[in-house]
Image 1: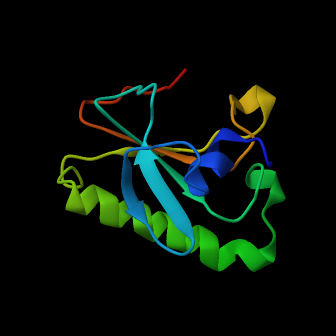
Image 2: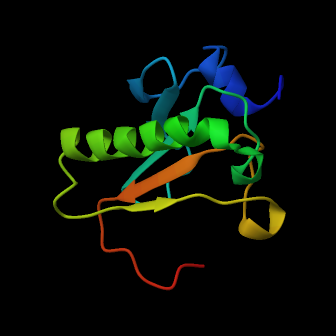
Length: 114
């Protein structure tokens, strides 16, 4: 994961428009947004996908979801609503080999997705 773009963003080797950072996660605007608001929330721990999580990561995943809620509330779109998407591996549409959560908002989102 040394050359992963998200790892480089965590290490501040690549700039990003950061909206939240703490000791466990980093959240920043996606450079190819799929909605008016499209934020990526990533763990600082090196995890390739959901399939790499273990029981030891339960607190981390809970922290990620609480961070997503905090971002939605602080940016003012929690009441209108939002979607959280996690793609897993090739058939799931995962493009970057680092676990990441897409936070999408700012318009009505249709169902079913892609």
